[in-house]
Image (cartoon, rainbow, N blue to C red; front, side):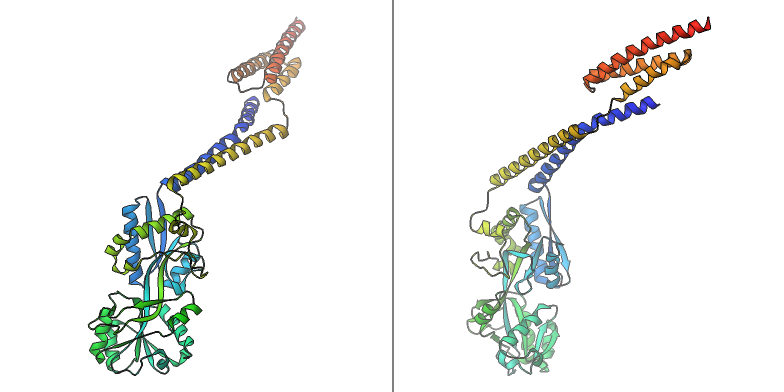
Length: 441
């Protein structure tokens, strides 16, 4: 039993010399498999969307359908957040790779891929209301559409710019259905609206106000350019006469007002090639996206000359828009280069590890040699039965050593020592048997 354990330990020691190489090969294969999976395998991306925004939900659904059709290996999974602030926070926390956000609530780690639409910021006053400008909002009540948590913050920003204390303007959260009664009973002096120019929101909104108080009046945010310059996350938008869908043309004349943009943003850590590919797919797939969602008719590429730090453009999107995005063949060559470099580095580390192991490992005699030495020393005091057992064990160790040598699993020094000790054991056994026989006679 002792000899078996010693032989087993010896095998484990010999096998350890190949362990480093095997681990290096496995690690290299894992790296290669990972790169192949990223380039050719199924890629899943999570996109954060505010569940309170119908527009964002429909946009996310359209994007998902586009990628399912154009890129079967890409899956976009929608992660619903309580509101747009929650969508931005999810991206910052690394819970998603993509997010649909509004420019005045952009995430810190978000970088723009595509601008999906721009919302016009206007006020609509019911018929008979004396409010016809932002300056006259002081002391009045402004209606805010339900489910839009960012609108009150934007309203405060506008009021502050015009020197109107936000606390002097009362607020009332209303649904579209409640606007008729609010206008009829003079509960509101105006309605603050942030929506795309071609949105389906305008027709029911103007209809509800007209039923309550007659023809509604629309007025823009004066000094929109100055506000946008002071707050770069905002912009201006030109709204042509009659652009808002309603029972009557609105606005009555061309206007320029404040706007916010809705963007598809990605984490800064997203690889440039992936960000560029998403940007390309959305921009080239615009006709299909518009067919799925009318609000996406305003899809546009971000301005690569825009250096506003609050809304940076992802380097991958910039590379695509400026024509510097590497081709798929270039990406494949780069991937092959890095795979080869990693495998070479792992092989070098493995070879160095084996060299260090061989140099600094403790030198221990082979266990078969030590056992034969023990047998040789034990022969001088063994009885006839023990002599037979020791001789058979010596022969077994010799046979095992020969088998190991045949498979090149033993050292040349060991085979010579084993042969020498087996010869000594046999001579010692013969001498001991003659001595025992003489004593018995």
